[in-house]
Image (cartoon, rainbow, N blue to C red; front, side, top):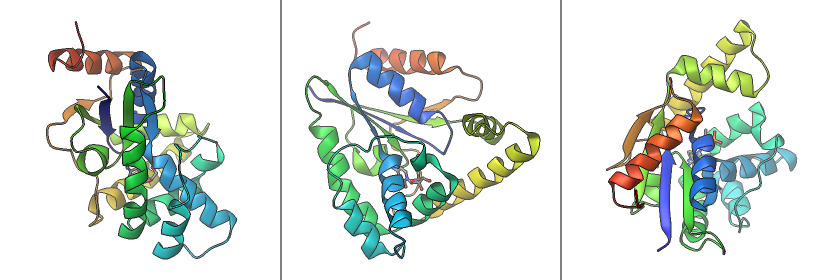
Length: 214
Ligand code: C5P
């Protein structure tokens, strides 16, 4: 069986960490779908292209493998462009078959895939074996993101918080594949949970669902 698990949720809710831990525990290919939007955004910036739906879709059509993470992909400017171009149906349609193909055909020795993003349980893999929706308070998410970016000063945290709120709004209000809690998803609030505890809850859920032996 090719096991497919999806994790959706807003920015800095801990999706990436949980996806990495699940991929290591269960030997699953980790597909960070946000990186695809970031890779397209970075290419637009580096080539100084107009961030049009046509340009974005063309760049996306050349992606054939999971995007390798880098610090450049996490830069604020890249995040802003990524969130903006993610509203283009043309770009989403170009990325969809690539993400679905990777989820359904992970290379050996993977036993399946874990995807994280905003629409992985609702659009990319609506038939996933297990779906999680991870959330956390805006304060906690801003704290985590500021620490991640090495900017723990109170003023910077306020700035990070505003930035996250802006992205939350854009991601949940777009008309095409907005951020939603997918049907049948297990919702977890990670505000007061360590990454290890969050993983434990997910593994317990998989056992309860009969996906994993106890
Ligand atoms: O998760 P991450 O912050 O890396 O994603 C970057 C941007 O890509 C998000 O702000 C969101 O707008 C977009 N995205 C998306 N659908 C996904 C994953 C990310 O629209 N499945």
